[in-house]
Amino acid sequence: MNVHDSEKVVGTLVQEGYRQVETVEQADLILYNTCSIRDKAEQKVFHRLADYKKLQKQGKKFGVLGCVAQQEGEKIFERAPHVSLVCGSASYRKLPEMLTQLGVAATSVLREIPFDKLRADSRPAGESAGLRDDAFLDRARGAKLVRITGLDDRQTDECFETEFTARTNPHRGYITIIEGCDKFCAYCVVPFTRGKERSRTSDSVLAEARQMADLGYTEIQLLGQNVNSYRDPAGKRSFAELLAAVGEVPGIKRVRFTTSHPRDFGRDIVEAIDAVPTLCDHVHLPVQSGSTRVLDAMQRLYSREQYMERIAWIKAAKRDIVITTDVIVGFPGETESDFGETLGLLEEVGYDGIFTFKYSPRPNTPALNLEEAIPDQEKARRLEVLMAKQREVQIPRNRKYVGSIVEVMVEGHNQARGQWIGRTSQNKTLNFTAAAGKSPQSGSYVAVLVTASFPNSLVGEMMSQEEGTKTE
Ligand code: SAM
Ligand code: SF4
Image 1 (tube, rainbow, N blue to C red):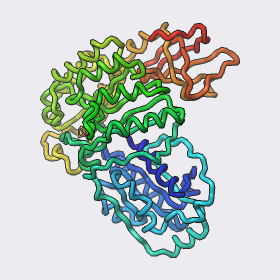
Image 2: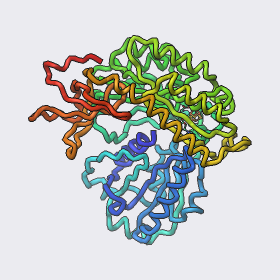
Image 3: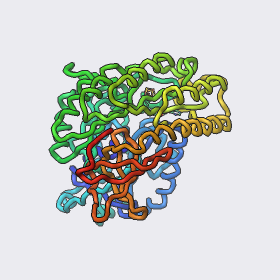
Image 4: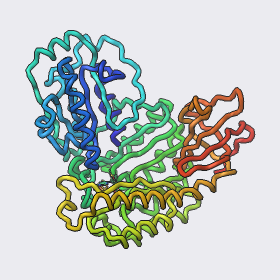
């Protein structure tokens, strides 16, 4: 979601006459988009801001956006006095206004200069920038330190809609359908940094999907902290109905959605995937722990049994839907036996991929008051055991594709290896070669014979058009 937030910020500012540049050195204004989900991510922000300090005498201005901005607020000015702007994700609409107050408005001079084509930047930390403009630099050098905050809008019912999103990938685009979170898991900062849950109307989501299809996008990813908690404010469509409707937009070949919360995961989502071929064969369903006792302490709102019920619905589908998850190890009070239950769950579900996290204590969260903290060394050990177990689970799951023909969207070319990089509907990376003289274009869909597998990727050979009948 942070990548998409950066796209929205860049789009809004470009529309106002700002221009994105390639390097920090070229920029007059550096906006740093941040994540505070774990302490490590947050510490990185302050290290990076410290690195920027030496650029201050060149007249550059610095702003902090996103979750760290929301969480730390004006304290950022104390820890990094060279920062002039702190703005949470719900206030991005006001950025142009805030930049004007700061004295870094895009002037009429700036508007006369043609915009550069925006380049891909997949890093969550998005740095966008104004122009190198001598008049601006003189003003900035002479100006006294002005500080602006935009932190008050977390409860807004307006979503930051995306009319000026600068999408960095010309084939796959994101659409945020729901913002914020009302679940308040005991360990998580998101409800504090992103505010209450608020959905966009399904009509506006569909209008954006059609617009994207007209622009040539073929893959759409619907986003939300809990995408399936979506409630159409106009009451027209459920999440599953919206998913199906996006999948039926002419020109759209693939639809993905992330992240689904198990409590709100209904059978109708699986039925939609079965019914609409453009919906991808992949569900990301974070479990966090295999122990009901730990799930209760985490306030996850479901038991292991209820989670497994959802898994059974997914496995009963006509299509072979791949399941991935998130797991936290070392939550306070997690015993060796609880951890063993998580290891057992990996095998029982047969995940195709997991994101693993060591529990990280976060400000304001109820888990801070829990006793029986797990020492960091033990968390690290559990993390390694977990990853080794998942590797064991993943190897045969990937091996089963060897010999089959799958359709991939071409994402790029690895010159050094002489391979193209593709992604399957199941969200697997498939590196493939093509016959001499063949050069598939990025964004195209081709059929590939899978010839080998690794724990995290597949390898194959592109089929000729006559051979390439889809069999997955
Ligand atoms: N809303 C999604 C859900 O409930 O499954 C997850 C969104 S959260 C931004 C992404 C992941 O970060 C979570 O699934 C969790 O595994 C991890 N996470 C969140 N807070 C954490 C914390 N305090 N320590 C470690 N991992 C954390
Ligand atoms: Fe965080 Fe829980 Fe909300 Fe997910 S559901 S964003 S983990 S509070």
